[in-house]
Image 1 (cartoon, rainbow, N blue to C red):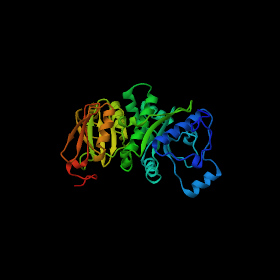
Image 2 (image 1 turned 90 degrees about the vertical axis):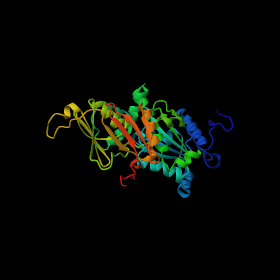
Image 3 (image 1 turned 60 degrees about the vertical axis):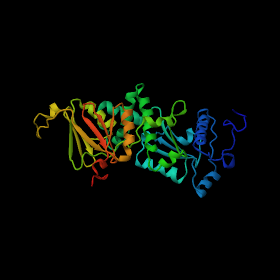
Amino acid sequence: MPGKRGGWGVRRPLRGPKYPAPRDAHEALERLQAGNRRFRESRPLRPHGSVRRREGVAAQGQHPFAVVVACADSREAPELLFDCGLGDLFVVRTAGHVVGDTALGSVEFAALNLGVDLVVVLGHSHCGAVGATLEAEASGQAAPGHLGALIRAISPAVTLARGRGGDLPEATLRAHVELSAAAIRASEVLRPRLEVGTLRVVGGRYDLETGEVVFFGDEAAPLASPLPPQPTVLGTPGPLETCLYAHDLDAAEAFYSGVLGLSLYGKAPGRHLFYRLSGGMLLVFNPGASAQPGQVPAHAGAEGGHACLRIAREATEAWHAHLTACGLEVTRYAWGTRGESLYFRDPAGNVLELAPASIWGLGDGGEP
């Protein structure tokens, strides 16, 4: 309250010893909450904007107290909405706050080299990237250029949101924040700090109208997949094509593109879906249509096939959490000390298996 000694409402100079760095993630989060409160009440202090501060961080290096992984939307500016200044925040921005390799590497750099204790994944209302993903899924049309990569990265959140119900755009935004935060938590580099509690990863939603940021907290972790949007997959060693059959290709596309995050290579409405894998192709045919002769010999088959897709052994738990969150019934089978397989079905009833190459005594690259 204003006038209370030490209260966040006191308009005091925010620099030097009067504004010490937060001692841990808890204090860092409190500082972000206080700054956002000032921002939305139109009483910003605009700290750390002086010439002395600018010269200080240039000469002594940066020591940010938080990482903010935010959307590139011009209406969401972390330094402004958290009322921070030079050297306070390490900001990573991409459209739709997609956490790919470069974004994750940036977070790892800040946590390991700069000693940051708090990572915030910040989504916002009326997100254009989320809206574009929903439109693309509704129309069934591929996005041009590299926009397709953004759509594929956000699509798993749509699948998760549909299972939860409620307003789809808002549910998708929440799910995508959780997926992005979980992807950061899955980092092998960050795991030691996360396990001992010196690093915290939380999600948040910024409301464009009110200016308020609501933090989700660490409880979002079990709900989301900590995997990249396009996992590395492969069938049994050396195949070029793996074929499955499904009468409902729309449901098949939603499953393989959304839940598993595979990259659609080509499609013929009512006949087939082609997905490019690492070292081969996954072909999903409508058995009735593909049995008809055409330019290539008939591909006759029936629903109820089986395919095994390769995953990294250390990603087994993450995949199990993701598939379960998507409402799938997953059966686990341990192959002694060689690893585990995850069995589940696609909408057509095909049995899918995710397993590390080690169950066959092979390395990650498929070699003995």
